[in-house]
Image 1 (tube, rainbow, N blue to C red):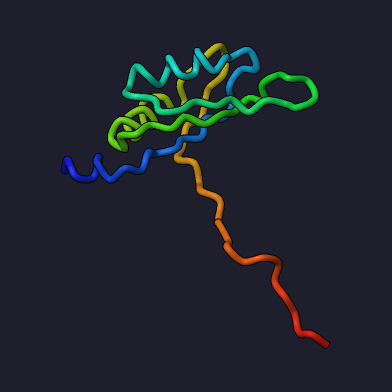
Image 2 (tube, helix red, strand yellow):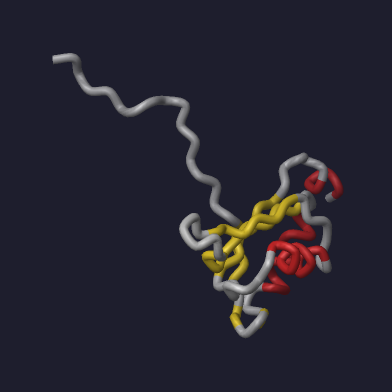
Length: 103
């Protein structure tokens, strides 16, 4: 059981439907009540500099991350019911664009 939490891979969570006024500090504090937070990042609009209403939290212990996900999903934060789920990793390709025939 202990080995699964020592595999070195943190669990990245996607948090959606955040109030635009929510700060990274508030988001980090919210998740720290459920365990260690490795990183916390709000996604900001490059034009306005304001939050887009979603962000990511990485927690090094999967058990803590799963507990936070279960306990915080659907919770009312600053008037918004937030949604918390495991972030899907983007597929990484080591190949360039698909090449066709050399006709």
